[in-house]
Amino acid sequence: MQQRFISPTLTIIPSFYTRICFIHIRKFRHDRLIPERDHQIAYSKRKARINEKDNREIIFGIAPCQLALQAARRKIYHIYIRDPAGTLKPSTSIGNIIAVAKKLHIPVLPSDKRFLDDLTEGRPHQGVAMKVSSLQANLIYSDFNKTVTVYDHKTLWLGLNDIQDPMNLGALIRTAALMDVDRVIINSRKTARLSAIVSKASAGAMEIYPIYAVNNLSKYLDCCIEHNWNVIGTVGPKEINQYQAVPCHDFSHNGKPTILVLGNEGFGIRTSIKEKCNSFITIPTSSSCSPAIDSFNVSVAAGILLYTLRQQLNST
Image 1 (cartoon, helix red, strand yellow):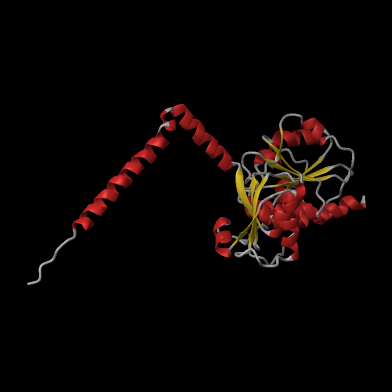
Image 2: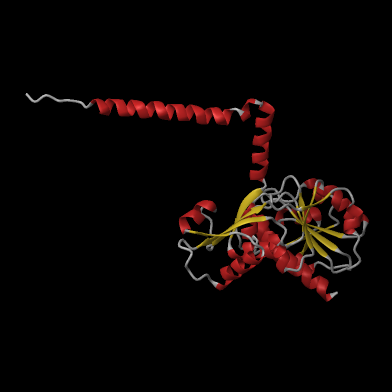
């Protein structure tokens, strides 16, 4: 029977390297733990990392990235372009983004599709994404009178009461921009934040459009009424008689600046907000439509109503 021999070196070498690795691991851990012994320092470092992370996000898509560069309202850290080897000829739109980035000394990093897909969580990025600082609405604190003092009867604003779906919010901002709405007013607390998804849904309009936030929309509407504004609420078919709403095409503009108020996707305008409205309009629907389908999507309703109001304002 053949005997088996085990070389001593085969048993010594693993043991030797294990000891070396153990020593280095202990040293590495020791070096890292020394500064963390002071809990206050450790807490400050963690807080700084969290704040830095919270203040950054990835926006994606050609229009949002182009308009973010144009508006210069964000700090831009990196631009990621789909070009794995760094040799592809970019499209005209992406070429313009690269040209502006070079002028502003913003790093442009060639990336493959898989990386961009992971970076944007599988959303349609069109081959470009940017790491940027977050964007906030302009918060109006207490000087309401200054912001509502206007003299142009063609002024048209859009007030949004608790719009929580980011896709809807983006579509509303896009519609407002196309319908020449002067500004959008949102609740600061119960509205979807101005995220990358909102920017993409708005086709980048969020990056350049004036969006304002108030802590209390009801009080802000009070101020609008004091300064002789039309505060127009919207209702569905079941509330037409209760609020004496008129079809949008029959609304008669009285030569005052106007703010159109639209409500939440689920429950519409809150009762406390409806109490501030001095008139109501509605969109007529087909009589053959099922009663179970009793309302438009909020962004669709905004398109119809803002178009109607803008036409009337421009004709006066």
